Amino acid sequence: MRLRSTQSAAPAAVPQRAQCAPTAHPVRGQNPTVHESRASSTRTLSSWLLGLLGVFAGGEGLHAQTANLYTIPNQSAHFVRMPSRESSTEIDAVFHNPAGLVELEEGFHLSINNQGLNQLSRVSSDYQHLREVPTEYEGVASSLVFPSVFAAWRKGRIAISGGLMMVGGSGGATYTNLPEADAGIADAIPLMKSLVALGNIDALIESATGNNPGYARLTDYRFDFVSEGVGFSPGAQLGLSYQASKLFSVAFGVRFVQQFVSATSTLENVEVYNPNLDAWYHPGDYLRMVASDPNLMEPFPAVLEATAGSLDVDLAPAELDMRQYGIGLTPIIGLGIRPSERINVGIRYEHNTPMTLKTTINDGKDAGGRFVDGTETRADLPGFVTIGAGYKLSDRLTARVGMRYMFDTKTDWEGRDSLINENYYELSIAGHYAFSEKVLVSAGYTYNRPNVDAEYQQETDFRLPGHTLAGGGAYAINERFLVNVGLMMTLFKPETNAYSDHPFGGNENNLKDYNLTFEKWAFVGAIGLDWRIPSKRMQRMEAQ
Image 1 (cartoon, rainbow, N blue to C red):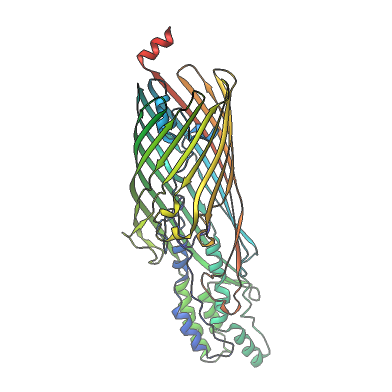
Image 2: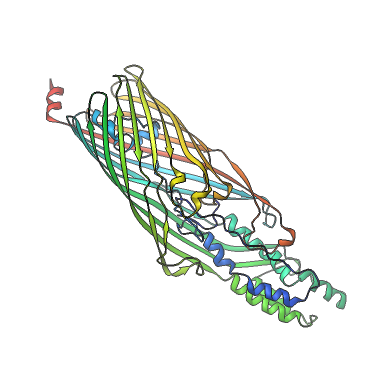
């Protein structure tokens, strides 16, 4: 979840990592007025962090995209129980293999599906100034409602189809801490020590009084932070399939897609702790307390007061309440090949979907000016191609293989697309076994492989290679109704990257690289009901 600016708090790509240019800090004994100048030039930390932590906002502070805005394949309970669906000839072919719809029985077909999604993301940081090193940060994106509906009518060589589905999204997520926010606030302590040379102040007072007040003994920090977001992309699809010959069938369609992104974040109540005083202070109030020490002589009190004023501004409470919305059209082309009764091949191409998200700021909560009402951000849905083949090994056993190759590098994500090294792809294998005309079981495996730069990874939106295991079954209630159920689990390969940027600065004289480790697990459960109404001709045939 590394985000430094964000994306949809839920789904989509995000902006590049923001960096502060290091600023030279004065050495011990230097004129304190130099520190005052440094403090006044510091930008507002709270608003800067929220700009990065509008964790679900497509417009992030710098570049953006909508987190997780990829056309996801798990559009049906059929897929969840048997993930290789690129060559499907069942009702879910409306999405997975539209050219295969010409193999449905004549008549009307309807499928209603729902999924429950749960994704756990974890980021570990060993940034040197954190309260605990390393520190782990977790977030859960979940949704109990992720529906899809498919309908198709086939007559002779023609099939007309439509669908309503969630093209992308991952439900909602809430974070009470994130590496970017934690490291940024943690830097406040070394920043305070260097801006006003608290160690020198301790030494001066000790030389004058024989007592060291321990003002430089700032050992802990705390703050209140919450970031919530949700992102989803509902779509409506229409298609026409035609059986050109016994060998070939074709399909043409279009999908209307909307993207909704909502992000709210709050950062407030920043405090630092001095064990000598056994008390918590806002950083500005702490420096004012030090300035009130009667043993201090000018210009130190004036510098402390000026720096305290700057910290009041830099660490003032900041809020973000943002919505983003965009629409797009996705052209779809399908090709079906039936070389024999036992083998079929499905090919589908979905074109890149240009998408522009417009930002709306509510109640002036713009993270201190980090986001601007009315601005527009590109957040395309990548185009892709799928190829799959099915082989009927026997009357009871069927096997399928498939692949999906996405054209990530051809999208416009406001610059984040430049951090994609190679296009994403998936490979899958699955099969089902029919115990009887009423019961079948299925299982499958998918491997997914993204290839992105370390700077691509964001705290709330990162991509990792993964292995997916799925299983389930189907039960025919009668000749017209079929129930599908499935479970799917994805285990992602952890990734550790080294970074050198410091969110706020304040430790440039002792800068160390730090590591972020990204981990993720995902679980999906699905249930669906298929309903077919045979044509009158089919009904007569079934009655005979």
